[in-house]
Amino acid sequence: MLPRVARLSPLWHAKPLRPLPARSLFLRPSSPVLSSLRPFSSCLPRLQKSKGISDDDATPVNVSPSERAKAAGDINLQAKLTSRNSDKNQGVGDIFRLFRLVKDEVWPLIGAFTLLFLSAAISMTVPLSIGKIMDVVSEDEKDPEDADKRKVFGLPLKQFYLALGGLFIVGAMCNMGRVYCLRIISERLSARLRAQLYKRTVTQDAEFFDANRVGDLISRLSTDAQVVAKSVTNNMSDGVRSIISGVVGLGMMSYVSLKLATFMMLVAPPVAIIAVIYGKKLRHISRELQTAVGGLTKVSEERLGNIRTAQSFGGEIQEVRLYNSKIRAVFDIGKKDAMANGMFHGFFSLSGNMTILALLVMGSQMVSTGQLSLGDLTSFMLYAGYTGGAMHSRYQGSSSAVCSR
Image (cartoon, rainbow, N blue to C red; front, side, top):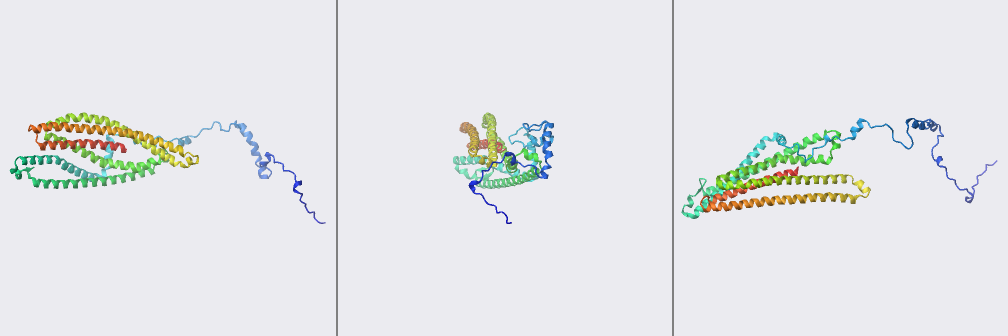
């Protein structure tokens, strides 16, 4: 008997498909493996009822994080780096700490400061030498016959010129040696600080890196190490040079004319007091500007680090607006700092020029009465300029040190 051949019904005789019920879409434990899971599924409602857990409240009851989890979630604030603007630990102790940093460079530092003293001493002989030369020239005009017999510091005029030129060459060599020694000391100190700081940084715990941003650590390794090295060498050298110029200049002014030096000492203290008071305000504005610039750097670092998230949500315009607002704040503080510095330098310049004008009036009267020679007045005015320049450079050095911190 031949097998029956299946015949296909026409398409128009087909019945429409019925949708499957929703419960049939889920797996049913038809196999032995799935049937073994049925006791666990039946125990789940009883377990929820015994624990008091409902479908509406899926949060576990009476569950608190462990102490270890709490400690992991908290950031140890003691692990944070000290703020650059913190002044509570500054004092004489920090100065001795700076000196301890250069204990391995004692002899090069002594040599550099010896060259500094020599170059400063040679520079301070220039005003007195110019005054003596002017006295000799003025006497030659009165008595031309004795021009060849005139001497300056026991030397004929031509020999004195040669000796003064040789002294200037020695001073230039001392300056060159001083700058070279201080630069070498600064580079050695900077390299030593960076090596020690990097070693201490990589051996810290994980909480240290949680409490401090990588940008701050890199800044301490690069910028701050150079600032400390420069403070120990260049800033200290400039400060000592300014002190020498001020003290020696004041002493030489008293030697040339005690009357004019007394008048200058009466004028200088009020100007110095005003400079100190106003300088505190300038330092406060400088720190405020530095804080604003640091905030700008922090914002740029955070936003650029998460730039993919901002781009995925189309937040580029908001990021630009936020950064522009920070830039505007920095510009406002910088404008205030520029105005304060301009007023200070204008006051300092005006007070210095008015003091020199008053000294010229008194000195010219003393020259006309024979109490003072023209060369002595010239030397006194040059020493006054040296002293004023030393005070001004000392302020500039302190303000730049504040801004670099």
